Length: 185
Image 1 (cartoon, one colour):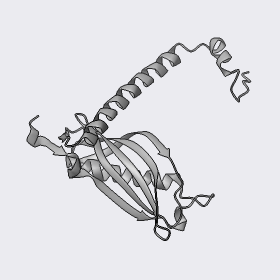
Image 2 (cartoon, helix red, strand yellow; image 1 turned 30 degrees about the vertical axis):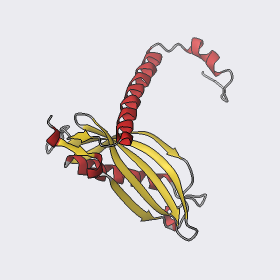
Image 3 (cartoon, rainbow, N blue to C red; image 1 turned 90 degrees about the horizontal axis):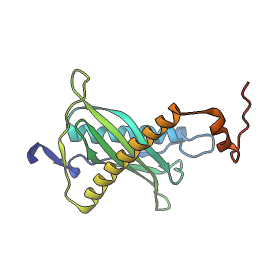
């Protein structure tokens, strides 16, 4: 693919900012994690769609780290960048920042990686433009995404091997120091 078909990371970087209102709060008085996940999905879609110019769907979320709680009244900004592109997939890195505007306190509250896939008009995977990396940070993020994809593939393969070779009697010993009681009839 020629370089003119590549887009720089900055081309599709997207920020969504929203005020956290009382109806977003959970029973503990903090912003519900589901609200933040929904906003992350929205910014991932906007960023991915901007990069490729096509409809995109979320196919996986690789960790959502809730680092600090978000409060009612915080101004939340979700910053999204394309960190990696495959043939039809893109990994969107998302950083969530919450700002207490009255106190001037800014905190990094969440980090996540969404894998999005571009779709054509027939709902088949569509090719996406290459990513033009223009800084050391962009190269590092791309390489980290490649490593995460490889580790996830190995992890899934290992879990499948364990599932296929599972023998209850052999595995029960691994539960001896865990907080569970096995009562199989």
